Image (cartoon, rainbow, N blue to C red; front, side):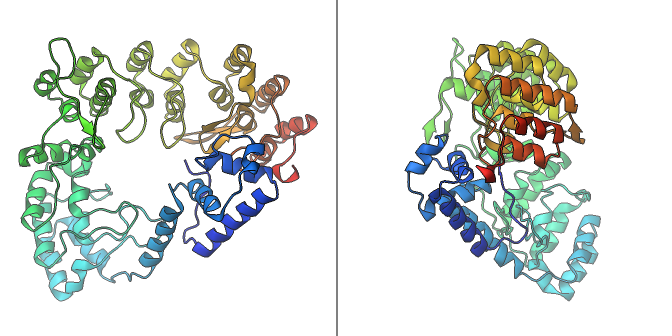
Amino acid sequence: MPSRTLPARPSLAQLRLQARELQRGHREGGPSAAARVAAHHPRLRGRPAREVFAHPLALADAQLVLAREYGFESWAALKHHVEVGSRIARVQPHPRFAEALAALDAGDAGRLRALLADDPSLAAARTNLDPPYHYFTGATLLHHVAGNPGREARLPANVVEIARVLLDAGADVNASTLGPNGGTTMGLLVTSKQASDAGVTGPLMELLLERGATLDLTRADALDPSLANHAPRAAEKMIELGAKPDLFAAAALGRLDLLRAMFDADGRLVARPRRRGRAMAERDAVGLALLYAYVAKRADAVELLLEKDGNWNMTGVNNGTALHRAAWEGDLAMVQRLVAKGADLYNRENPFNSTPLSWAQHNRQSEVFDWVRAHCRIDLHDAAGFNLLEHAEARLREDPASVDRRIDQWEIPQSTALHWAAWPSVEDVEGRQMHDPAERERLVALLLDAGADPNLVAGNGMTALDIALAGSADRVAALLERNGAKRAAEL
């Protein structure tokens, strides 16, 4: 999860300056610089400050750290994002695009045809040109027929005719949107829940293919994007066109006939699916198939797979494990089954660096949250974040050294429990929920009494005192200061 947010129109020169400032902070022995490097540099991740300072930080290293703080894998990826934004900013909006889109949404093929005849440039015109830049940035009219992303306007019943009007007017069937992870109309269509739900995926795919769209049916993971994005009709059409269903497709489509045939009499996989050029481990494959089945709400497939020996901590269907998804849905029975089978309650392998308990809390699934709180071992970071004093006390008794353990929690990389105890609130789907200030003081005092270092700097460059002050937690800030806490800038 990014610990920094890019401005709407970032400057590459300004980003280079930020990287040089980080490099200078490292050279001068700044604690914030060391913490940021330790949080984001792959060679120095998790290292103490003395080891970070022992390694010279080249400008390329500082740029890598900065890129990862902004949520990019590399400086090159960040640079590409900025350059894409600059190119998009030069695209001129068409004055009649909104009028043409209204005709498309209304299913008014005659009006759309007339507009295109009057101004043929509309067929190539683009919209969604303002930052922030997402995958639908720079979409043409043809991209809109895929229904992805979903909009308030539903796809018209005659969307295939509308697509034909656009193609006849010269719309480029293989044009891509302009934003990061942009896609063609076919790419948007095969991952479109709206088109799948409307039952128009197959006819639209046939039309696009007829007009020259490309679609690779030979990849081992050809069906995965459709299945992961709730677009089963696209997967079914691709199978009809020649794509080979594997374990994951059988699970996600609820094809029990195919699913049963993939296991031998001893319950072992006849053949292991391949991903990234390698055969998957059997337990991983079974666990991922369960995740596909659960996300697709294929109850019979879920039951069949839970009888097997699987890795129930697999991710790979958008975000989170099956336990995360069950917690989010408030599916207490599934949460209980997965916990009984050993699913990891501390798993944070998702873009939010959050546990299944955190997913339940964020979606206000109180029954799941309360059951986990009452029956499971909650780790120190979640105990601090959710003000669970009894769990904080228990974890500190079990493992006193955990008081200063650093992990990536929510939006603060390499943070300790004290960093989160200092923050006065927690977020959920309804907004910011404030903790009782007196309870926060008790939690902070507990951690300090257990030996928490109040001056450790998290990967976002902040101490616990910085965080308390940022959250206007004045009583906690005063308590920290009485115990020798300082702001990062003072260290």
